[in-house]
Length: 302
Image (cartoon, rainbow, N blue to C red; front, side, top):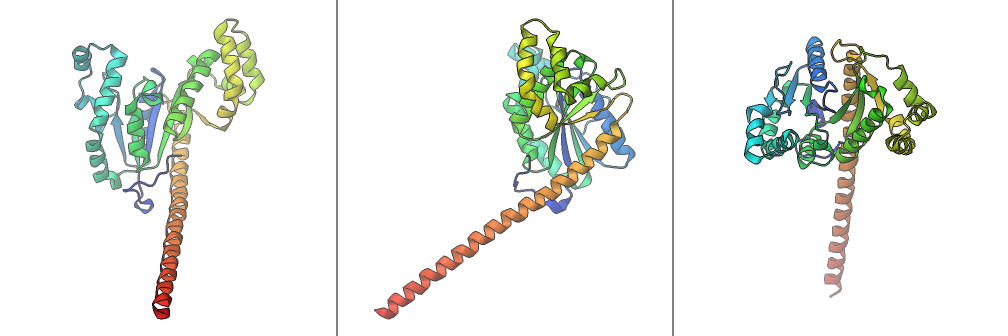
């Protein structure tokens, strides 16, 4: 997923790995972007940060490209008579219309950095049904190796219904974007992750937790859980704390492996693509020669 034949793509140029940080509001996306930026700077890896959250008041990091520089979130609320969520979606839609300018800036500097970190708003619907989310993901994935880190708040996931809703959102993002996705279980320093590991490895344990929810939502979640069991068995989970840095270096090592895997896979895809083109080209030449020989024979016969 995410490896497309873009016009600008060249596997030998050492292209940056693009990482979208997506998740519910308050899950710790911005803090994780900051932590990842600190860790990348520590190992001397150049990176580029893009902030796509127009409603954020302060950022702990210094973004290279900031949506707030061009889009006034509060002005959009007043001008279009929108609420907070509607104004954020509209801001992203307006920003996506100018994204070709952002793309040009990145293409000029792409050889100078190894990673592009993209911080997103807490409105997950941007990436599940909004046009702007698709435009942004496709713009990057058509030119660069691109992955999604879906951030989950561990403290809130103690409630099995909250956890199943997070899984549903991550499924929606995966099927909408069709990009390689990882589940980041954040805030590991607040509570133990043992209960979540048990849920992920043992469906019966998770089912028993949902049985305690006696109202309609619990019954509905149980019916979904079996369907989603296959999904979260195949999805890679990483537990960490963006605030304290616990497990953050494990994320970096995974990012390195993913980047290498993308390049190897792209090279294989490129070689297969070129071999198909050359085989078609040879076939066409052979057919053209056969036609020419027939014409010559006809002329000689006449």
